[in-house]
Length: 521
Image (cartoon, rainbow, N blue to C red; front, side, top):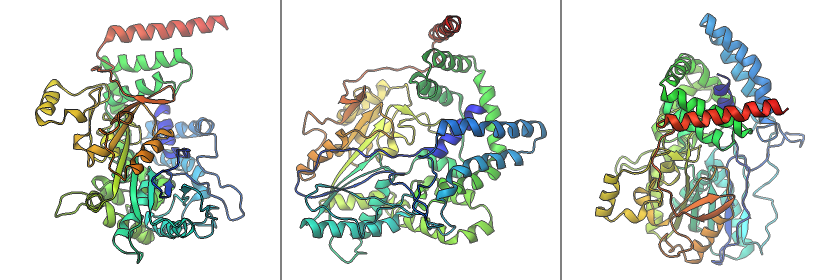
């Protein structure tokens, strides 16, 4: 349970602060760049930095909070009453976010703010890249209006007739809200965007967020095994390689022996028992209390999540304006068009493409998603699946490749050229298969300059460059030792728990290393 608590608290604290220094666009148009969530620091009314997940020692806080929470869990397991346990977990999470809470209408409260202002920031007319910063807690529709003001100021300062937009993660939702409103004529001027790159975008939603807010949590031994093996093997959770090898090998052996099922079933039973009383207060004290995050909940989960988080008539009334804001975003981009059967954002992008907008997409894959829900076995970047990030590409389970029948059918259909060299991703089903690039084995929060380089070349081509036009920018890349290289493919079809001899060898190797270290101290 301590690991489960750590995962839950880590999920509540995941943030993105990286801003890549990519090359300036050479198409002659300024680039407006929107980073992801957490891109701008939140300050208190007195100008001091507000406490938030980016300003605390996450590991230290988890260790500090785990004791009291686990103590209440132990009592709950004996008594069957989880009220005090839920309260302790909510209190531990709320303490992280209390400085940056919004009010129940989804507005900044207690004078909290970002220091950057789209109306007053000085515009450098000679710049090629303009970093639009925003309060990442607010509704994308509100931020879209600020972006329109900023774009107009950039155009006035530079004399340009339009802009290119590079946006990532939550920034893509903000940018798409602006694009939709601008395209619909809400701002009373011509459409300004020439090219756009959706970089690990959240417009299709992230399965992690949708599943958690809707309570659609499903633990499976295989997905737990894959996640633990992948992250412990890489040193992300345990720094000592020997201890990590021992731990993930033990988990895999327990899974092979079908013993892990018992632990998973036990935890699943607790989750099912406390879901109704836990999700609402836990969500509202952190990311579920920000309208921005609701834009990253896909329609598959949206209605269920709204009813799960705002689960009483009193809460629905208290958060009436908040819900209206999230509904408005989904009515603009997230809902399904009953006539076409597609999400509204897809219809919008297809219409924009037909009207001449250049659309490039970058997606990541090669890592398992957090193992708390169905489909978390699909390849992705921890936060979302490759299908979500790429707007529709087909991916395999982590550790699996496409079957021979699938590959043969792709050859017959003429779509084999879209399949990754390692046979784990098929881009032919993506919304824009010819302008969607993929990079594997890279974390969601890593954004190398190379992403901007692709967009630079895309803009220079007036949005016409495809994945087949330049041998330097093929559809698939790999991230190795901090460098982006062309993916040559390593066909590998295995599961972590299908080779007990290999697992026993790893377990014994890790154990011997640990014993050796113990006696050498």
